[in-house]
Length: 113
Length: 111
Image 1 (tube, each protein chain N blue to C red):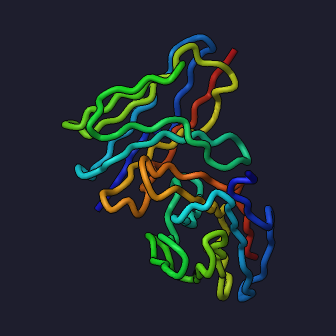
Image 2: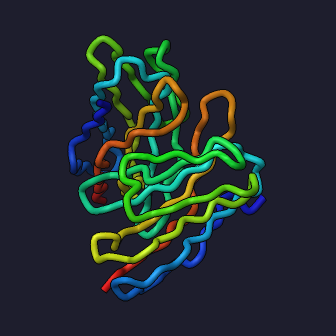
Image 3: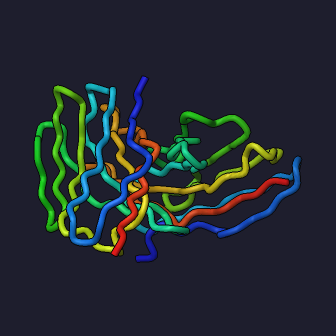
């Protein structure tokens, strides 16, 4: 099992550009989510999905879109990048039962200039 | 709304015990978690506790939960330099939909 994988690891964008952060998991987890991590603020939930075809907003969804066409993939799209979106982005997945412990990817470090 | 708070920094000597504290506000939390993040890496689940338990032990780790005071702690026995990292407390809400994280406690272990 590769677990949760994210690409790219690093990305620099100019203000106004768009891009997609990729996330995939091979554990057949139904629940997937995206977080951003900023210094001194812990992790904040951007969007999440409880299964293919179902997505919902988290705490800080503005400026981001998601879709979930398959169980394995949960891409995060930045529509028009802004410097405030400079952050480290983590994708996570969890099984539907029990403690629902989340497994995290290694992160994507995004800088918007 | 939900809120999870942690102290920002803890410094201990190698071999000592470390205690990292966390308070939360959501009385309907079902599971509470401790995650570890090493520099440049993602979050690694250390342990979790179900809300109807008050203690869980896993090798060098002991989790204590005081549900009345909404206080969670993580004790690391015989702390090693490899334990230096940021430790995040998190709670799962009753809908099992999302985790709410604290700001993280940076643990520094000196030789």
